[in-house]
Image (cartoon, rainbow, N blue to C red):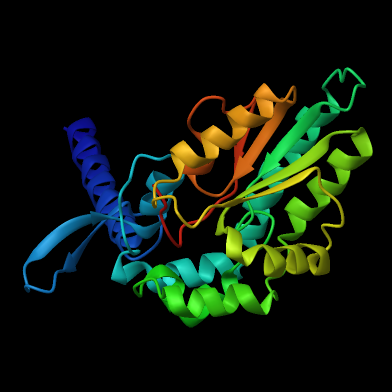
Length: 260
């Protein structure tokens, strides 16, 4: 009888502990599902903002046009907090370690492809003014921002850039910016610390909005010209997909927008 009472007591304590832990997680970031109210007033289950960001970074969540409204504060805190910089440092550190381990031919034909917006340069000042991706994209305002040529470098990527040059790897920028923005882009890159490069490729204004055919096509031109793409870095999966991708790709975190 005493043993049976002890078992009942232990079971009761376990149930209380589970409920308490669940209640704690429901109020914090460890809880992966939360109930929110849609604009129609009906409850729906959505992934937590941390899980949503993971889905974006792993390319499991695609074709989205703005961040979930309930995640605006989360994205703001992530971009301004230590975690974003730590994530960038991990990506850049892995890229640097990979580059240092390469056996280069020494013929000057190895190149590393970089995206520009939110990879080599950060557009956080623009997105801070437009809800960190919660508000519709404002092309007019963004074009003005580009023309000002004041976007700062992403420090971890700038450090990687310097490392690559020191190793003898040439840098090629392939950007979705249009060719009429070349002067502002050159000015901005140089003022941010990117002092030399092999090529800067901008998108012809006549091309459509799809990024993958444009960027993969430009990488193919590099290969056809005799270059070997040893690395490829961007903040969007569309920067990195489409043959030839390069020997290895590295994605910089960006939960603020999606480009297909």
